[in-house]
Image (cartoon, rainbow, N blue to C red; front, side, top):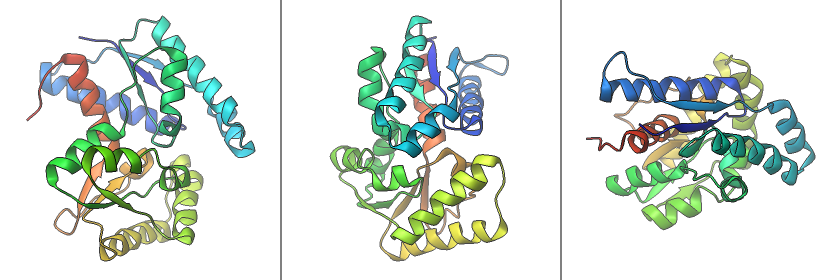
Length: 234
């Protein structure tokens, strides 16, 4: 079994989701008492958040790269980042650390391609929704175009994630807003919705009869276990 290097997310909640799922998928393959081999580096997210707020991209990359190097030094065979938005710096972090990174969009692209979806929506933080690190890979690997929420919707989704979900809460009005947004994205032509934030994974129960959902956290963790165990999932 390969050693998975887990580079923590921007909140402990998303990191804990990854850790749980890595072990759940490992147990499904190996048995109830088995566990994933995981080396975790939990980053001081206060430093990262301050750097993001200041627009100091170099500092963000530096902190994350130092953490990634510690995973390599600790013997990790490859790395998983427990954050959607931090994948905008994936190439820089991978290059600086010298440790192979399993990109979060790769297993998603595989699912979208196999399903034949041509248009998908990606709710998440503003960095994720407005960046091209997802859309370019989806286009290249799956041939799918992305639909972005309107600016006011992106601002509100980001606020809900940062101010509510990042603190372990969600207001009823916010839950209704997210549900309505997903319906609107479907009306705008989205054939599927990619949950581009680990925190959204913990609160949204998709109505799969209405629209197809892809849980990035679950698919990413599943792909990591597949690589660690070198197994093929049905």
